[in-house]
Image 1 (tube, helix red, strand yellow):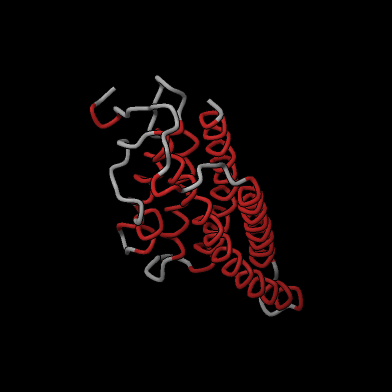
Image 2 (cartoon, rainbow, N blue to C red):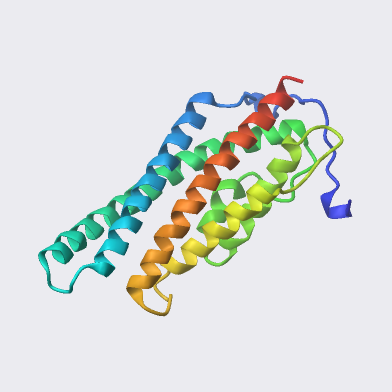
Amino acid sequence: MTHDDAVIISPPARPLRGEPVFVPRATTVVVVAALGVCVLVNAALLADRLLLDRAAAGSDAALVRKDQVVTLTGLSHVAFVLTGVVFLRWLWQMRVNAEALAPGGHRMRRGWTTGAWLIPLAGFVLPKRIINDIWAASSPPGRPRRTSVLLTSWWLLFVAAQLLASPTATGDPAATETAGAALWVLAGALCIGVVLRLASMQRTRLRG
């Protein structure tokens, strides 16, 4: 274990400023449901894009598919924003809990839990650093781990999907959007696993 991985895990401490320490079941359910909607919308978008590629140019089928792609693209953007809002609310409570579990185990201040996502370029790195610390604080006593295969796989797919959605992405726009939809489906599915796993870890730790 390296010095960077060393995290002091202690019994749940008294939360700062009297903040309640709990795993928000309702918010967790809402986050999982919202992620599920994102996965389904992007799966439908991926299917329509593949069918659009096969349809004859200018045909009625192509026009119908194109309209559906536009509609689903808009829905995916709305679902992404709404899911992000709920996810960040859930993640904030996870950070509050993590501070009680490992008061000295966090490399960034709590405000970065939401702010780090808004910084260009740094948003590809800093949020993962924060989540790593939450993950370590929520790990079983004596076995602190800042990450896992599940967590790292989700983050890599999430970043890749964002890069493909960037206006600077090069290549065939249709192929890029198709690949992006596929990545969002995979990233969303893994994010559901991350949310459920982290909630379970914290629930176990807070119960002692």
